[in-house]
Length: 73
Image 1 (cartoon, rainbow, N blue to C red):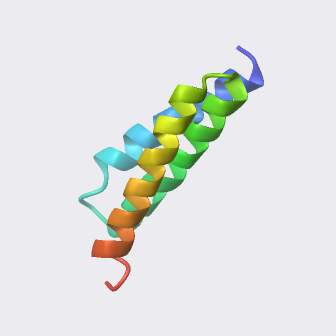
Image 2: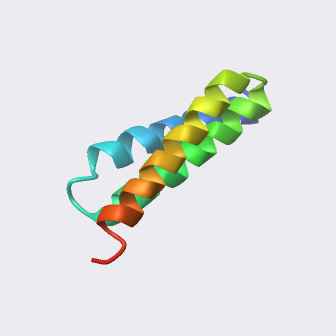
């Protein structure tokens, strides 16, 4: 397994963990957004631009959700 594949595994695994933990703290929503951004970067580096694009959108959606609901907490 090369370094890019390990990076992708880390990014997608982090997304899963942070998504599962979102109910515990609003910081996990922000961490999920960051993990989505990492997964997007992985997609673009790998050459799978549709995956990178979709993950970038997920990162923006999660960031908006965090800002809208949790930034004032």
